[in-house]
Length: 215
Image 1 (cartoon, helix red, strand yellow):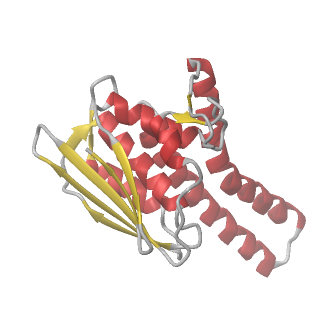
Image 2 (spheres, one colour):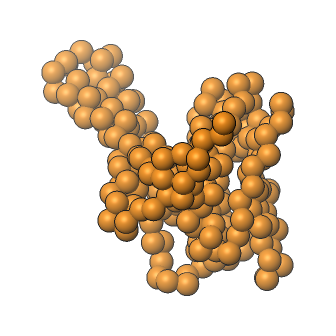
C-alpha cells in the first residue's frame, strides 16, 4: 500500500528561517576552519606550523567567500523585483562554488541577461544535481533562450550516482508528512522558484546520469 502524499504548507517566517539555516550550514565549515587557523597562529610559533595555518586560512577564506557569493544569487534577492541577472555572473559564482578536485563543471550556456528567478532556479538545480555525485564527478549545464521560452538542464555524472533523497517530491511541493526541515528546504525552495518562473522541473535518472531539466 503506497504512502499518502501531502502538500507541504510552510509559513513565510519558517521558510526564511530554514533558508537561513541552509546558508549557515554552507559557510560554517570554512569559517570554523579560519577560526582554527587563527588559534594555531596564536598558540604555536613554529614557522612550519604557522605556514600551514596561513595556508588553511587562505583556502578557507576563499571557500567562505565563494559559498556566500553563490548563496547570494541562489537564495538572495540579487537585485530588485523583476531584475535580470547576467548568466556570466552565475557561471563565475558556480565555478568558484564547485572548485575542487572532485567536481568538474561544464558550462554550456550563452552569456545573456536572464530573469532573476530563472537564474536562481538554474543554480538551485545545480545544488540538487551535485548531491547526486557526493563522491565526485561532472556537472554539465545547458541552456537555451529565445526571448520568450527558456529551457535549462543540469546533468550529473559520477561513479556513485544516486538520486538525492526525496528531491523530486520536495521540488513538486509534497511529501509523506506535509512538512519540510532544513535538510529538504533547498529542494522545496527550488520548486517554489520554478513555479514563480512559470517553469516545470523534471528528473530523469539512468545508470549513467541524472538529468534535471526545467522548461
